[in-house]
Length: 319
Image 1 (cartoon, rainbow, N blue to C red):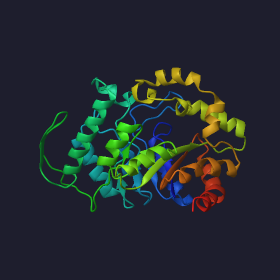
Image 2 (spheres, one colour):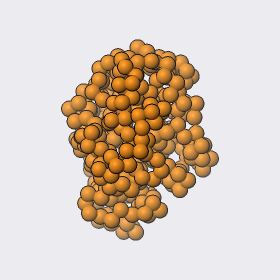
Image 3 (cartoon, helix red, strand yellow):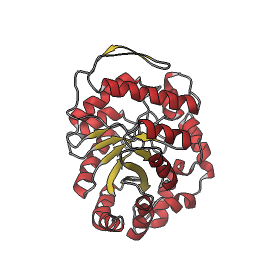
Image 4 (cartoon, rainbow, N blue to C red):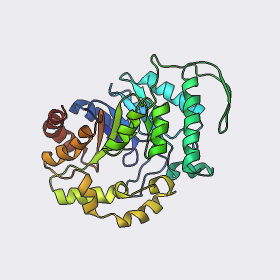
């Protein structure tokens, strides 16, 4: 299992994300995920830079492959514009670039005033958007009059040297069916062995990728409290993450999430065995790639800890 670092645009300003990318490369991480948000999940996280600017800067400081995790190419930004952004990013990222996509959250997509569609319509829009993006990334001149999108005589002139892969985020049977049909990989945030098996059974190709949070620190109780303070949304169940429209709503829902609930799934504190044990679940579920993001400001100690204690043990256990 390849292990990369998850850059959190919800929690860090752009210059800090660029610095973390360099630290991740130096620490031996094998790739980068980067989130694509308009809003953070809550005000405690407090950031949300424009991902495409950050990717351009990251490409100047390291050669790790970069994947968006994930971009919603359906409401806030037209898929023709996302295609151009992906092409330019792939041209700049020497280690490679993948356009991870998903059906999105109201949290980010409602900002233009467009109606937030139902889940079935969101998946239909995503399928059409990926079709448009793939056509544009060939460099052909595209005119498209679909159910959800119109493209008039568009062509991308600045193209990458190699095709841009498009892995798809999927939660639930309908999304997994779509991902298996249109995706170049499977994306999720849980060690979902059942979902991955369904993806493969339906012909899904490419790597299975997952993202996870960790909170290294010298005191486990304090690390758990910090993880709960900044990322209680990881404990919000069901479809709420797709339909709640603002950070304030997530803060209200997160009142039901306790520190112990977060500590039960997020590795916290200084014990490398806890980090290895909780993250090894992704390898046991069959995932090919895992991207771990440190919660909070203590980034240098995290990278030192993972480089010396966690990554070697996790790689041995995942063999």
